[in-house]
Image (cartoon, rainbow, N blue to C red; front, side, top):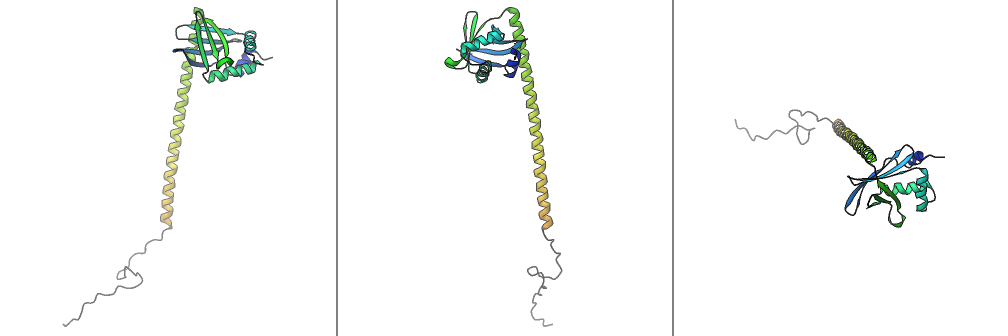
Length: 202
């Protein structure tokens, strides 16, 4: 039987993050694995609400949603989370996270984290976001290098092609014969006629 960790990893739900806006307030929603438990967190930047679920608790949420299997339930969660289809309702010490649209949304009740939990979760997401940013920047640098390399290769090939075509054209053209003295310019095979000087009476 698959463990909670296997299920979460297979569905790629171990490290999600997204910013959600509800009623003019912004919330950072993120997930992670703690040993074999799946953790959902919501923070407004000051406070943090948290829900840690084992397999039994997750299955109870699945049952409430009316979804047939855990795989289907987690797929629904991932699809809606990736699309940003989320809403956060904050009431007292509780924050309710709706993942999905309308009556078909998956609903989770998160409770205000203890001071130690809050520090741990905020530290975790801070470093994760920093690492994600660094990975994105590295990929961008690599992509720009590849683009520059392709541009240079294309420019070299075009130049070589033009040079080759010009060389072939010049090679294919017959060489101009050197002009011989006294030959006609219009008809090169006949000699120039001497200009008539008229009658010489001397």
